[in-house]
Amino acid sequence: MSQVESVIVVGASAAGISCIRKLRNEGFLGSLVLVDKDQHGAYERPPLSKQILLELDTTHKDIALISDDELTELNIEAHYGDGARDVDPTSRTVTLESGKQLTADVIVLATGGEARRLPIEGADLSQVLVLRNYEDALNLRQRLTPDARVAVIGGGFIGAETTASLSKSGFFVHWLDAVELPMAHLLPQALCEKIVANTCAQGVELVTNCRIKKFAEQADGKVSILFENDSSIEVDAIVMGVGMTPKTPYFSEAIQSKILNQATGGIQVDENQATQFSGIYAAGDVAAVAQADGSTIRHEHWQSAQHQGERAAAAILNKELPETPVDWFWSDQGDLHIEMAGKILPTKEHLVTRLEGDWPVYFSVVDNRVIGAVSVNNPNAVRAAMRMIKNDIHVDPLQLADPELPLRKLMRG
Ligand SMILES: Cc1cc2nc3c(=O)[nH]c(=O)nc-3n(C[C@H](O)[C@H](O)[C@H](O)COP(=O)(O)OP(=O)(O)OC[C@H]3O[C@@H](n4cnc5c(N)ncnc54)[C@H](O)[C@@H]3O)c2cc1C
Image 1 (tube, rainbow, N blue to C red):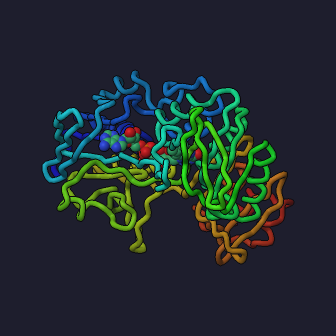
Image 2: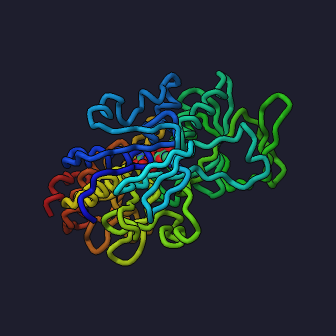
């Protein structure tokens, strides 16, 4: 493609904002338009299950991703509250909900995802909520009267965080999961048990292996959850924290089959975040990124979205791509700050436990190489693991497990 003179970024969140910042930092002087359907503009999503539920007067302004001043400084034309209805990648045209059409040399799709809803009778009741946008958080907060009881469905990180935050804020929480142990698909079992016990010790009532039959509105405005075993509970609000699905603007059928990754529903991109349509890029939770081994991965976490936005910007300007960081993720659950890096293999033969402080640190080790780590209230341990992963350091698992041996020594190999 000849010199890029205009870029439209659709989606003003972690990926979209890092992309526009990087474009300007790399010297792009052309027209830069930012589009987001959310009237509240660009804000951080991670605080929606944390700060927003812990400090109930927090507004979207407190969690803004970019200030109006910075937008002006960077000479960005921002359209908030008017989403991209459809995108034609062949003519590089974005049609907004308002009918306005925008064209550019390059379009970056950073549209993230939307919260999944379980297909249960009554799931469309106004008391049944999800948590993906600021508006969702406001809906939940509206229902948090001082004696409110909330049911949180889902044993992933968002369910765990929402449960812990609401409980810490003094609300009674029923935490419902369809399996035996929340987060067991994400973290080593012993660690999940300890984290979940910690959450339950704050007064949370955990119901595992639960099968929900339906939700039913009560005359007093509350909602009841009826289980398959005919038991029920009554709450003021239900939050479904059961994952997300990628959200793309409308594409014609012919385009869809070329631009979407069938397995993940995301937008298929290569290592440059480029789709097969010239000048069309995708980044963040919506992007299904081709890997060197032929597989495709769609990440759903902040660091990756942020990195992919920068990567797209560098690729657009034909600059050197930023180095791919070691995968890193955090989760705050009440007083617990959990960090993870790399790949956590829950299988016992690959797990090394280091009994350090109140919370063990777990490393995934394959062929004497650390490939992943998770810690609680001990970010330094995960930072050390990230260095080991990045530099492919040889470690002795016995030494790794020895809390007397400082990790910084092992980092050198
Ligand atoms: C409650 C919650 C807590 C989280 N906590 C953590 C955490 O602790 N740690 C962590 O690493 N990650 C966390 N995440 C995940 C992290 O927030 C996401 O990975 C990250 O926000 C993805 O960024 P993104 O830019 O790809 O997409 P998104 O943040 O989803 O943003 C997409 C943007 O595109 C806009 N958009 C969508 N469709 C259109 C359209 N058609 N036209 C215009 N605009 C559109 C949306 O309004 C939105 O602003 C959390 C997510 C949630 C929801």
